[in-house]
Length: 284
Ligand SMILES: Nc1nc2c(c(=O)[nH]1)N[C@H]1C(S)=C(S)[C@@H](COP(=O)(O)O)O[C@H]1N2
Ligand SMILES: [Mo]
Image (cartoon, rainbow, N blue to C red):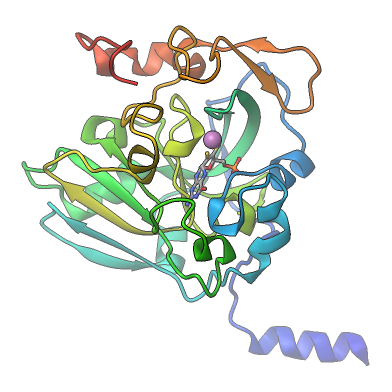
């Protein structure tokens, strides 16, 4: 009786993939690491997502109130073909790949996460950036009804981040819709978030609703909150300390001994040439 009822119900519901459901047709990518994966439990219970509170366990406790359907992402600004994409369309825009990346938070902890998604470049190509497009701004959802942390002025909401155009077009720069084979958990930035693995974690905006291509360098929420501590570039750099702590080492969540932090978080071979001629001790 129960089985029949749930089967009938399943037939009526639209086939919407929500957090925790398996993602199918995911290719393994060449992007993998010698480091062991961080556990799913740690990835989903130790988070920074200030829209749901500033404690590490707040997002896991509070992000259940985030509604990820309906959801659209407007891609606009310096583009020939601005477009509002529905999330269902974004899930099918390009083949999904699993990419195992290191995530290094500016707070000196790190994880290894098997993301699922595709390069941001796949989306940007579709809107045809104009010759004036020099930067890309990412804007997260603002809705204090769903996001209790936004009732406090911890940051200037909505959360805004940005990349230079060549960083945004780099194949490593990922639009993630899942992790560990499943639809992205709300606390990790459902339904769609950025992952730029050679930069400190705060550059990777969660729960994105708008992507704006601009001529001028955008001002990010963290630059407004602490201009001397959180710069626009924020490439992982063990040689440049945060004003309040060292960046030379990191605590890999789940491990006991600290690991040395790698320049560009270990992705120097792929991205260092983007910064040729820049003094990386100044551009933090
Ligand atoms: N919208 C939004 N995006 C965000 C944050 C946030 O507070 N709000 N925190 C950032 C920080 S500081 C980090 S380290 C990563 C953490 O991602 P994770 O919780 O999936 O590991 O998300 C980043 N993206
Ligand atoms: Mo972070």
